[in-house]
Each structure stands twice: as structure tokens, then as C-alpha cells.
Length: 359
Image 1: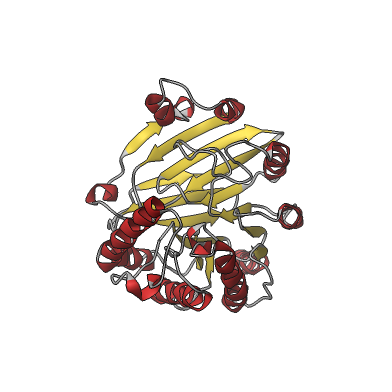
Image 2 (image 1 turned 135 degrees about the vertical axis):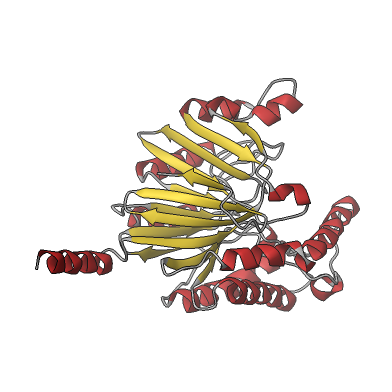
């Protein structure tokens, strides 16, 4: 009898909380593309010839990796799906972008979602967040409109709930997931969604860019960042709001695998940065470039006479854990009550490469 009561209690708890344990398979930046550059990029031009040349090199890079390496990542990710898996998450830069018209841009987005959904888990919701490449083309404003015209409807289908914006919230039991557009962010809408998530057991923020300056010359390209830090007041308000929620940020953009755990503003922000842009064989191994709190900004400093921009000093005192590696692959978010992990599988490795303890 006692055993029966225990089973019934566990069964009830499972359904009342969404599940005692659940997971989500995650792909980082994917930069999906076709081996034929004309397939999506016909008519593409850029007013700056050097920038166009750089982008066209990326078309070639993407075509090569999507012929062989990236399909291997997709197959590996599909093997991570089990009975606990609720979602497939993708952290932006779903596609390369760089299209000439809105019809091509929407086709590009739809093809990428269809391919990744079918390849990883056809029966699960596939959720993506806007990356800068997802909004880029001959006319960026046109591409942004194309994304906004297509993706909320597609996300509505995936989640079975009405999604009317590129910023939105969905829930799994006691946990909230807030999807954020970091490019030209609607600050008030993002704040509203984050406040709606208040009181959740875990608040996950799915965003393409990091929320911290990152160890790269383009460090300023983070949520409400910028070369001149002209949004410093809003940036600090957003940081304080995220800290008050003890937010867990799931992001990409940098093409590294990185963990940054920060305390300040009366709370905590844990950020996991992920990439599935597999361009070289060496990225299939875990190659740590820096670790420990004092490793934050180390690579930038080494390349700049030992100095980092002042904004790093604003964040550095709160860094409690830090690691960064030039490694890419697929990832599995595991939520087990108060504990949260991300298991990383470099390249298409059979075994787990590393477990990151987020909480």
C-alpha cells in the first residue's frame, strides 16, 4: 500500500510540474545554406565590395559544412532525443541570410526549419530566436519584415499557442522560456515578458547574442551593447532585471562554447553560449582557450597589449565561473528540479564531451 501511494504521488507530481525531469536538444548557430550559392543568394549585392566579398566567402564555407559536417551534427542531435525531451531549441543565425528579396528570404527560413525539425525530432516543437544573419540581405529592413511576417506564425504552429511577435514567452510546467530579439530590441516588450516570467522556478532566456561583452574585438555586439555604449542606462536596467530573475541565458553568435556565471545587482545570471558552425576538424574536440574568473577577457587582452575595454571592468568583479572553448557541436539542456545542466557533444562525438553545471 505504501509503495502504491508513493507511485501515485510521484505520478501526480510529474503531471503537476510538467515533468520531474525534462530536457531540450539545442543547436547553436547553424548558418544553414545550399552548396550552390545562387540557390538562395541570386541577386545579392552589398554597397561595400569588401563586405560582399567576405560574405561570399561565407557562402562557400557554409556550403561545404552543410554538405558533410553539419548533417553529422544534426544526426548526433537527433540521437540526444529521448522520452524526457520537450523541445528542440536553436539560438539564432538559423540561416546565412544575404538574400535579394523577401520571397527568397522566407523560403530560406522555411527550408531551414523544415530540415532541422525533420532531422532532429519531427514530433517536437522547434523553437528559434532571431539572429543577425536571419535579418540580413540586400535590404535589411525588408528581411526583418520578412522574418516577422513568417516566423511568429511558424512558432505558433510549433508551440500550439498564439505567437504574434518575435519576442515571446512559453512555459514548461513551473519554468518559463523567454525568446528575445537582440537586433533593434523592443526594450519595453522584452521587459514585459521577463516580468511575466517572474515567480517561475527557472527563467530561461533564448537569445542570439550574449548579454555580456564577449572575448572578441566585436565584444560590443551584445544585448543593448554598442561601440559607444549609448544605451548604457537601458543595458544596466536590463542586467538588473535579468539578475532579479536569476536568469539562465541560452545564446550563440560568438561561434564558441562558453559558460559565464555572474553575480551582481542582487541576483545571478548564468550564460551558456553555443555553436554548431563546424568549419574545421579541430572543433570536434574540446579545446579550452581560457578558464576561471580571471580568464574573462584574457584573449582580448593578449591581442591588445594586455588591455581590455573599460566595459569589461564593469562586469569582471561579478564573474564567478568562466570557460571558453573553440569547440562546436550539439547540446542537451537537462532540468532536474533545482538542478540545470547542459551536456555538450563536440562535433558528432558518440559520448558526452563535457557537462556544464548551470545551477
